[in-house]
Length: 323
Ligand code: NDP
Image 1 (cartoon, helix red, strand yellow):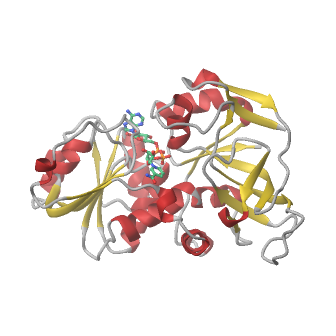
Image 2 (cartoon, rainbow, N blue to C red):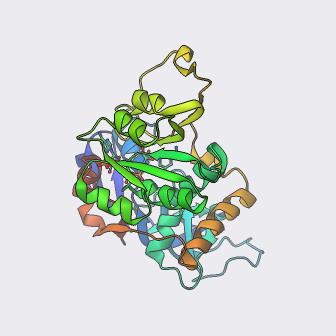
Image 3 (cartoon, rainbow, N blue to C red):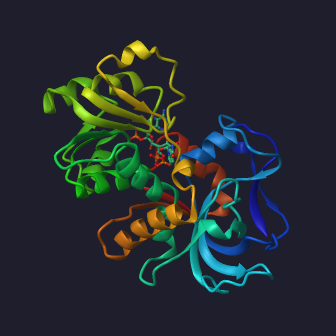
């Protein structure tokens, strides 16, 4: 099968399309024939070496959607059968490939009226948006929240979930085009943080500060994000799109600020938790209550340029590889 493999970490050119064996199902693991794989910013951290990969060579990708290709011989449960439409998320599952071997506990069935493309968006980015608004800082009606990169994969979903919970949402984007997209998904105010000082703009909209900042941008936004919070506000720093955040002193949290650095996989610890978050998001998509923006779909062969565009802020919404 074709797969995107790295033999060493580094820039996008390190990714090669190679022929590797189709994996075999083993106890607790099924093999999925992927129709689409999702791109996520974490793929860039793993490819570049910011986050460690377990071993090299390594097939990139953490999520996908397709059909059940093979179940282990000792699989005696009724939940999945061959050719079921499924989506999955799993660390180091090698999603950028025609087939992926995935722990059965990390697979979910796709509702009939949800496409493979939309099901992939429900996985890493959808479940992240879910835990951020329900677990990291549970949004209350009328809260004010600031979401950075509002036209990104996570940002679009986070904005919609925060609005559904009754929040007032301020987002940031780097371009007018992205600002329009963010507004179309429900943002009440969009700040062009490439041109405006977002701390000043937030204080104009919300003089006391916001209850929560969801910051997936990291290095370039972190300190100002802190200054946008009201007393007893929460800063959820969940990503490093602009680079890892510099160290800070606890004294900088003196306004009784809560600071959390959460990770999705710590919010999918049991099969029950995985299914609850996945089915909540897939259910909202199925009912038309959560809209998906597919930014771009490209073939596996274009992965190098796809990563370059992703890391240079040219993309929006969910990015998919067609397999
Ligand atoms: P996005 O689609 O949001 O892409 C990243 C966006 O970040 C860009 O489009 C850009 O938007 C913004 N950005 C700001 N500064 C930079 C920069 N210097 N370089 C690149 N991008 C920049 O990606 P994802 O939705 O996949 O992920 C969003 C964030 O969420 C990432 O940091 C990711 O690591 C994190 N994440 C964390 C998880 C967790 O559990 N902790 C799980 C999933 C994602 P703009 O042009 O508008 O500035």
